[in-house]
Length: 555
Image 1: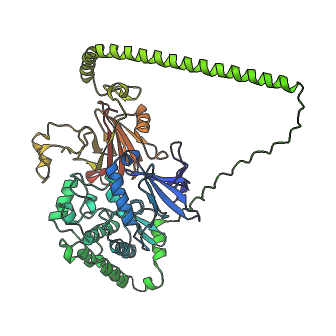
Image 2: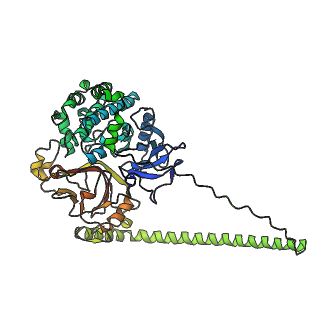
Image 3: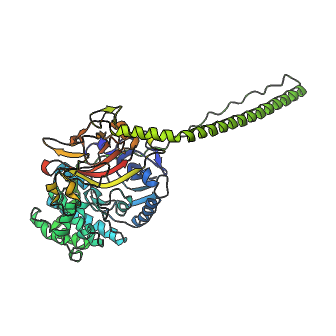
């Protein structure tokens, strides 16, 4: 976050210049829910404008949920929240605006500098607990508190996406679809689809703070099913945490929600341990060390200066050179000629329309008579295409055997969202059925408590694999893979097609980070966009990459 070009990206050709009167100054990022831009209020205060993706905006159920959550979130006021100041669920597209927080997320800060020192963890827990007091006081349970939803400003943490993340349907569901939240930071009752209360957020706060202290999730990484099983059935190992923090973590991570600390108790506990530093305002110095130098925010975009036309100079009056009677006769002749032109033009238009209608009828009759022949030819082409080789060759960037969108679909392909996908040495990705996680071999299936139908795991082959040797990469025997350059976030079906023109079957993960976008193309014609949430390759044996997947079928 030390380079302004990494934080504030220039607007691209497909970005709107303004949204609901807010003039956009730069891109801040993109994700499964939409794109985020920097703008300013009329008074010059910076705000973050989140514009919802068109495919979500077209869903009436999404709009209804989005509207309800906006109304709830507008009630939240707190020193440690990013206040929602404006929104329109019925806009085209829907959008919302929150106060801009100049600082990295907790996930980015830990990825950059490693685990935080104990004083920073205490300030973090106190600030987030105070934010939860404001959120719960408005009758809202966050349900998706995690490191990427905690921003680190110069004066303390800010909790974002309270209530809003629940509406997206993109980043807030587990792989099983049974619960709302992110697996590594769920509470036991949430992981088992039980009752979610304010105590659920306290458990997530304990996991988020443990991530800050350890540099990794407390319950480990890997298969989401395995992580959820450990959260529900096992006690967390607190021995790796700093000794002075263990009593508070034990209270926050109690299996019984009734035994967990309240946000008020967490604030008081942290204040006692911070001692005199609370009264002398030592917090900002701690945050400056964690977040690094603050990046200056670009200035508001000025309103365009209206162009004032030059006043016309008065023209001298010309005296008529023909008698008035002659001028009147000439005017009548011009009117008669104009009337004739209009009538003739109308007759020609009717004739052309009749001709086109007659031609359309003949073409329809011809197409109806040839439909059976076309169907037989189409079936033959499909059969030949499916028997063609599917790897090792490309034509114009399209995988061999891929389908032509002009011949296989009557309209634009609809995107299908698959949230919270994960790939590691065991979990692979099948674009045709993304939730059918495939195990490396049948032996691995014995320890996967909730994985069903593992009898043929050895026989099946996943399409996309995560491999780690000296370097880590995504690879496929069939699909094309490529990375969308970071200066062009917010990838669409069209930009994925353009990215995949020169794609290969392997993508090194060294160039990938949180927020990166990866495009896939299957030989069947399916195109997919994977937005990275977390990448962990420091320890190859336990490395993984997780994020949200969108698939366009037969694109």
